[in-house]
Amino acid sequence: MATNRLTPKSRNLAHVLLGASILVGAGTLAAPAALAEAPGQSPLSAPPAEVVKTVKSPLELQAERLPKVTAAKVLDIAASQIGVSENAQGGGTKFQSWYVSSPRAQETVARDGGNPQAYANASWCAMFVSWVGDQAGIRPTVGWDAYTVTYAQWFKNNGHWGTVAKPGAVVFYDWQGGKSIDGIDHVGFVKKDNGDGTISTIEGNTGNGKVEARVRPTSQVVGYGYPVYSG
Image 1 (tube, rainbow, N blue to C red):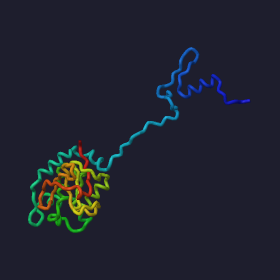
Image 2 (image 1 turned 180 degrees about the vertical axis):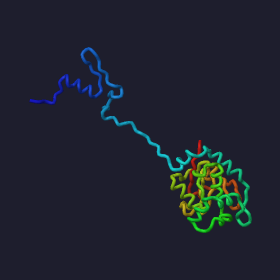
Image 3 (image 1 turned 120 degrees about the vertical axis):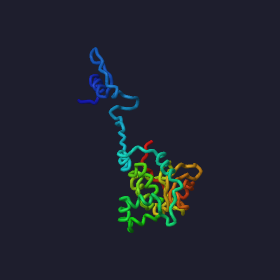
Image 4 (image 1 turned 90 degrees about the vertical axis):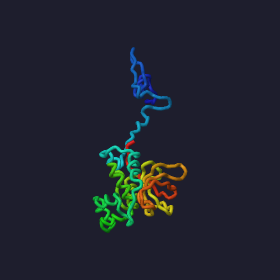
């Protein structure tokens, strides 16, 4: 009659299969260290090592082909333009002229209507941010647009949108304090988070029609777009 009881020989074989060390004749057969039993855990049931995969965003992939530029460098370029002013018609800046002559003007006209020359006297806060990114050599990760709403949506669509004020981030405002991208009125660069409910910024087309350093309440911020910086 068959039984389930292990003989000494079969018990030794079981220990081999489980990775334990056993005596074979006059010698010792050692199990590989990786299979040795730990207290309370069978090596056959141990979970496999976790494999961590890093998936890069479209903007991070773009950045691999671009110059390595820090947020500080971009802020230096933006700060070098402080004091630049529009004319009496609301135009005449290098930022508007650059945008009018860029291929992006044709693209945004096709999207929004009008004609490229209309940008010569249009609100230019987004064109200023776009120009700075182009001057830094990283326009593909800073983006370019003349309309703040679609500019913010571009960051969000690319997975580079959030609520943390980081140096070099592109900040989008709604003067009414709304939090919807559709309500965005203005855009600039974050210089730093002051830690008191305000941020220091560099912006074009301020209320004075200039590039200026400003301090803004975070209550007016809709969100932040994050270019890809080095370091």
